[in-house]
Length: 312
Image (cartoon, rainbow, N blue to C red; front, side, top):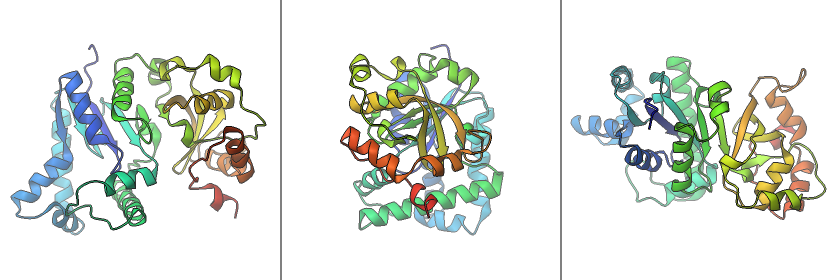
């Protein structure tokens, strides 16, 4: 391994960041630091549970300051590390920054399936999904208020990887390959982030009448490193293809769990002279386009978070 940068991994609860960081640290032979573990140790020293400390931190800014200062000190030490932290990407300026994403219902299922603790204890999938969303939004606003740093902005990262259907080994394989320059090297060098998305979570932006089975056969057995990246737009929590519908269709037909993508635009960045990424999503990801895609591929996409609001 010739890359001497640290790897920092963030993601919401249920994204698999702890599992991925543990395995990656083992493979690379690097020390792993978990800010979550540090937080729990701080709670123990104060004679509190992690939940009690979380509640106390909402009233006492010194708690977050202590954790953040410690992260900053670790980042300045120069030691090569694997860091599991929701905000390490902000402090480790030279690190390889990985952002894990997961479909919200899948993340809720994972959290619901864990042993109950004083932090996560939900009675239903819907309760888990809503509470995880609320926690994520609250955390996002805290980071924005404190540092002006938006964790949802994809250009903060080098790699964005979707763990919705990809198993931990597939995700770690992809992260390691990207870190070592064997996957997406040109995008990482010139136009980061590299996106590794679940094709079932990428929305089409035009109607198609048939699935190209010939291309699907040509790409059978291909992995992320073998595929030409799709041109991707990002709006809210949703991803859509701007260029590469045939390749996306082939990936869906072949049951791939990860496909590479180039982020063309996100949020208010322009896709065309007239339309931002958000506007393009609302204009082109329509119920009719989604229904046609589902009909041709005999499948059902996850419900987008923006499309119905955009049609009102």
